[in-house]
Amino acid sequence: MKRAISIALIAAAGLAALVSADPVLGTYQTQPGDAGNYAHVQIYQCEADICGVIRKAFDASGQSIASDTIGKRMIWGMKAQGGGKYGKGKIWAPDRDKVYSSKMELSGSTLEVSGCVLGICRGQSWKRVN
Image (cartoon, rainbow, N blue to C red; front, side, top):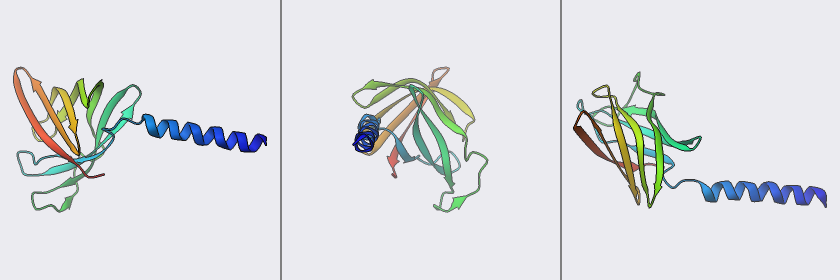
């Protein structure tokens, strides 16, 4: 009986974690950078914030390539603001090696990412790949 209750509690805890997972979590394909390359970025929970790390890199033809950016953090400090909006974070743009104050907005499977540094702003639409 105690074992059944323990299993039920563990299952309930797992379900609660699944239900509370932020909808933005997953992997997204960036738009091509200045050289035509793009990446797959995994968005994940990092303590109370949302972060992202580059998992794969691709050339302009879509071929997977080796890159020193793989494994590097691209997004950090992003705060959920409700309604699919996130803000007060930072994003690193590998193609220009700049860090921007950033915000994001999730709509369906599209993540709009934008950021500014010294009044210069950029934005991209990323598509969810899983």
